[in-house]
Image 1 (cartoon, rainbow, N blue to C red):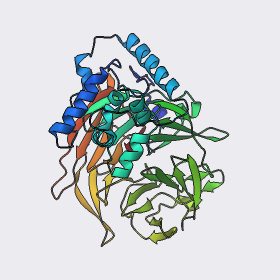
Image 2: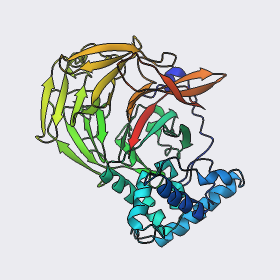
Image 3: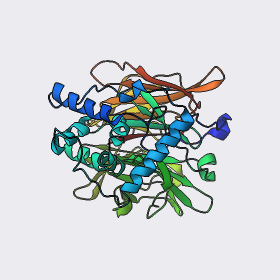
Length: 435
């Protein structure tokens, strides 16, 4: 959770300039030649020895030939036609690419960057079914093929996506205008092909779910114990939330979410109740770190480790010692290659956790020019083998969002700007989707 500080900073809630129809990338022509996609896949397979990397985007030849209005109409008409042919949700993979066979065709598609999947869906109904009903993502997961996409919200109700591989932005539809998402703090979590956003009305909690497959927002399933200000993290199609504030105060409970079944399962309770905490996965286990207890707003320096195999919690004293938390945003932590890193928003330093000595080592500085309020307003995440910092700043009378990345090594942090976009001047939420 990054927190909604709109009232403090006096930000407006201007809307994004573009949206993307189902299975599209923004500003691209849905009338792509199907033979172009097939040719690229066949040539890619033959020339790369089975590797389908660096394929040329077929849209480039037709870009700007169609206005945005007719482009959206064409996309909707085509999507409606395809959906009508697959109303039962059945995936027919028998008819894919003639000449190279089904297995080779699937192998090509699995290795194709998923930002090309709209091109793939335009080929025929079989390709459309593979993408639309999630079959390609399931097969990618089984093959151990994972890509990351970054999603962030810098304007109330709006989200923008960023593809770090191609270093390009894309838009997704705005969230429904539910009041609690415009005026109150909210948490977000990417799991499988979904983004969950949690909010709290005066009388009840509410969950919204964005689906990558349908490019739309719907109402999500509520937790068994609704909460806010909790720690969370995901692994593949599942996620864990722990702690937070419930109807009767600070919680020690935790729950497991299955994004394929859209179900919540209650887990054993933690040793300590906590709110304003952070969660992450490391070495195959889930951790919740920092936060505050209900008793006299005590700032917690301990962490807890949950073993998924034994379904037990282990208390780790002083793991959060020296990290931010309690009086500001929850600890800003991220894991890359099973190593834990933290961003200190007070000193603007990045630190690494020493597992053997249960201590933190300062590595160097964070990018330090972004707007934040005690850690609210910036995001610190892992994205594949990179650490990323997402921040916003005011420039020329409007906001600018910037994404910086660094691949941790034995040297000092060397942050590189990989994405810049005019947007809001405060980062409310951020989630990295891996699938």
